[in-house]
Length: 238
Image (cartoon, rainbow, N blue to C red):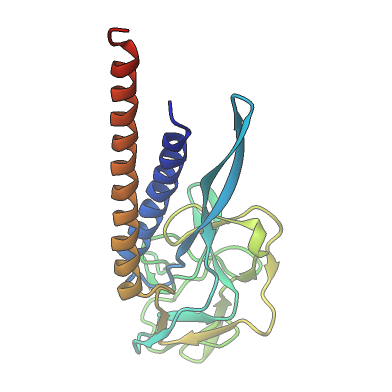
């Protein structure tokens, strides 16, 4: 069998992974606080029948931590983070972190995310909004004031880039130590951070990756045809 088919298959597998990542980015291009994933292609060396061969591989799952644009909403419970910080939230799997700041209150007055996960308070616990609250103000340091009185503060943390794992489109898990956010992390009230992914660029990438994937599949089919003809010719009458 021609070694070219192995190279084509490896390329198709890498493009398939790139297609999945790009499609997910495009699907979340309008999701507040979404951080896109990037795919890096690399060369993989292998040895077959004593001959060194080079293949392409793909490393997916690298999160783009660049800042997304801010959109003013005027909502008292909408917050955007400026700087490399995260909000702590409670989930059924434990503490997780997010940049999606579209907050609300549940039936008990607890501050929760759009998905209903309680937002953690600085120092632990949750933040509760008293019944009948008239004015809610969230300060740049995450302090929550209701009718002029502080009722708590949002937990703001920073995570090392290599010690964070995506566990959902808008949730991350710390694989290392989460430390309290420094003064460079600022909360902007009445705004939401948009996805740090350009939809137009994403659609162009989606078309490009799809075409590369299809071209590699056609190449695989041609190699298979060549191998089949070779087998017939060699197996024919002498």
